[in-house]
Image 1: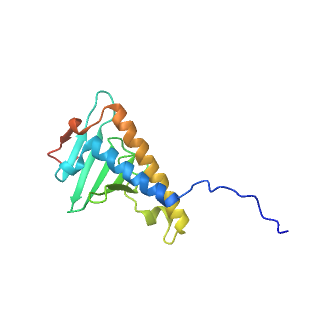
Image 2: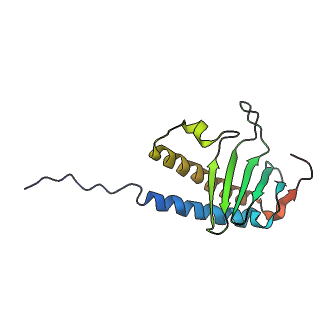
Image 3: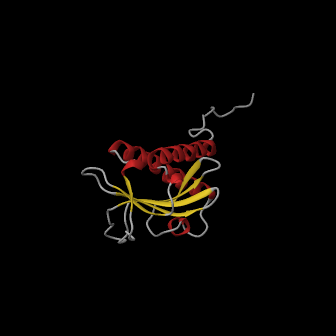
Length: 156
């Protein structure tokens, strides 16, 4: 008789599928919340009562993608940049949105190093996009919406 180790279920079944589902959820939350697909490139600010202003900078619009930054009007003392900050890419054809990075002024390779392991990159993307999902939900609960966005005529 051959002894086999006890079966342990994978704690994150279909992790890639879960991440893709999170990307789709982020797209729909963002599309419902601020409708960036209906905006032209530029800076927008959402102001709701006594809550922090939310800045949306729609940087680029292409036929199937949009690049945007979402941040608060709160400056981090260490970086001098607005924080929290999320650099996002929306794929309008696939209906997914991913957080490219959530570190002001830094790219993924600057956060994880030049040659991170695939699992490290995956876990980082999972954390960033989970944060984005929770943040978008929170912003909606605070009353932010496409109706509260105002286009800024000067660089904010």
